[in-house]
Length: 84
Image 1: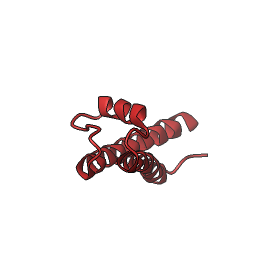
Image 2: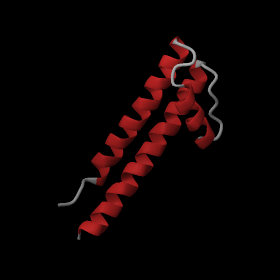
Image 3: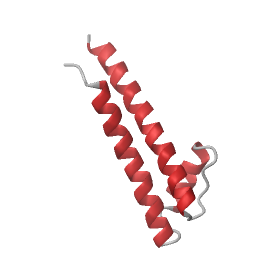
Image 4: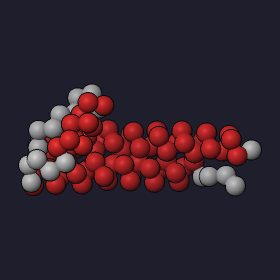
């Protein structure tokens, strides 16, 4: 059985982007929430800093959407190559 690479790409992007968005928004509401997670994310994504502003939330979410999409596409493609 093969996976739909397009569906997996979209699903991974929305899931990872949604997780990072939710943690970042909750960090804006309650400073300190998810600080260790956001520090890890800021060490991976260049230009993203945990400042608790709307701009940083948007930048982190866009990075996460792109990262999730690439990861999902690669996973689906590799899975389909191995499933043959």
